[in-house]
Image (cartoon, rainbow, N blue to C red; front, side, top):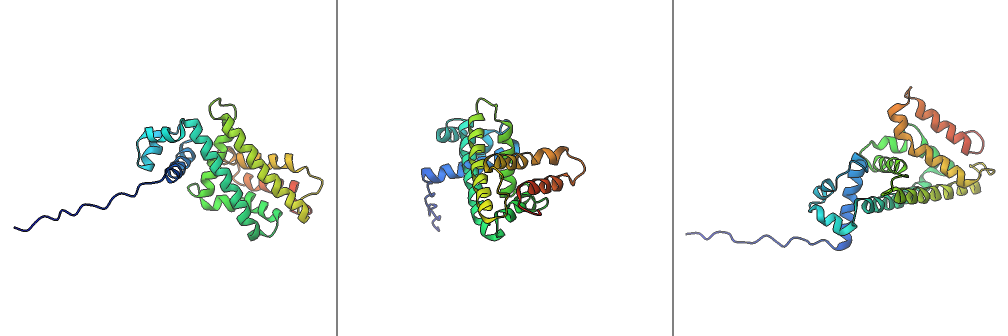
Length: 211
């Protein structure tokens, strides 16, 4: 009588604490971007990772703390993208045109790409500033991103393609406000060309000479 094959499956690869945390952050970014902070369920994050819901809380403590960690990850990703694309677009002004341009940059990647995920989370963060649980994280993320944009504007002033008389700090907040309210315009603005007009007006405000 032939013996049954009793070969046991190989041992499962155990994730390190850092790998587990990263997998949770990646899953949470998708859930927050899709559902928004208030509607997002930690059970959905757990399902994406393949763990139980208590594991999420063991790693981050609360939904607000997880959202804060996701925002920190998003801001770091935005800075990396700005640095990586700076060489592709030749100047700070060209990079701003790429970021703002209707039908370019984030819009071309669709709502489910990395840019769409960033855009959704940042828009949600902007609406949560007054929330007692998540507002501190949202405020901190906004400050970090505004700082990155101010640095980009300073580089543009040094290169001669951003208006030298502009104060980079308020100009950065203007730019961040335009970016953070894209979803509002997409949902409510008519006609469809409004986004292109907002992008053009913002560029004319920031760039030296013809936009």
